Length: 98
Image 1 (cartoon, one colour):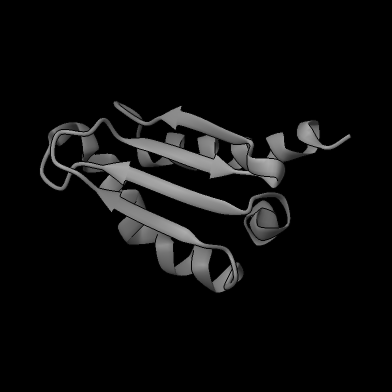
Image 2: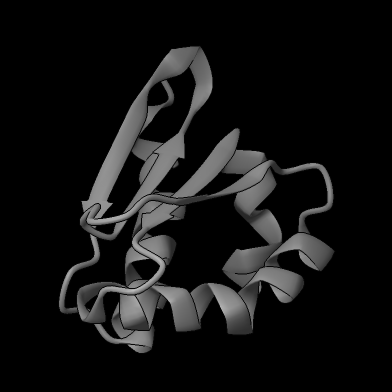
């Protein structure tokens, strides 16, 4: 997972949104619990925001240069699927550059 080390080069901010109690957000909560420390260790200057809100659909937002943002819905995805979506967001930054 060498791409994880490059997150801060491609992404300016990550935001995880999920419900604290809903079953739909369970995999997202577990992903954040298991992976936050590793992501932050590899990218110490990258803001990784955790937003918990009752009843919200689990989402992952990535902010790139010039205010461009992309969102991925995480409802029903497993931890492995969430990891793949994060990797896709990281690699999508290359397509945004001129």
